[in-house]
Image 1 (tube, rainbow, N blue to C red):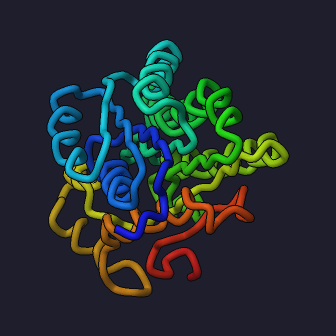
Image 2: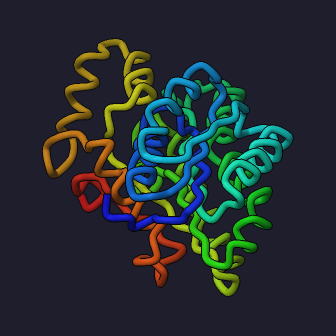
Length: 254
């Protein structure tokens, strides 16, 4: 541990698995206290046992799309850590949504799960971020927040919207010591990514194609995204806000 986040206090939504947990682990190793949240309490309880090896770690279950839950989780995290100066939002939903036959409710579900968690996290976390004096919000978008993709209207719309939200919020916070940035990963083989692939007619073929679709022909690694989150949470990125940082093996450059 080099202690780049020594004394930081990070609240991570979607922190029980996948990218969110990778961010929590990376931040904990660098000295931050961490507090994770997701809907599944059993998953959180197990994750926290591993996180405690690095330092203080707590959790609270709740739905990041429900205002009352986010307000409660924010309060619990601030009490546990003595404040909040870092928020990571790694919550979302995906699925096949072609324009021609996607049910409206399915499109709405994906949009809600993409946009409500970061909005609510900042809305209810703002007072704690401002009180910290120097703070960072990191929202996980996607390379599909930068480009389009066939039959992914809902996911692309939601992830593009996340970047717009980040840029707007960054301006609201800019003179108050709080930075807001988005991370745009390529294909990272998380449980959510595998679940989405399993909805396809040939899941294995879909996974093979996803693994090799980047200019650098491999999937990204969870620890690579975690390392980027550490940088964005650290004081080394103090002049960086409103950015959508691609970590996608060159996919979005094509």
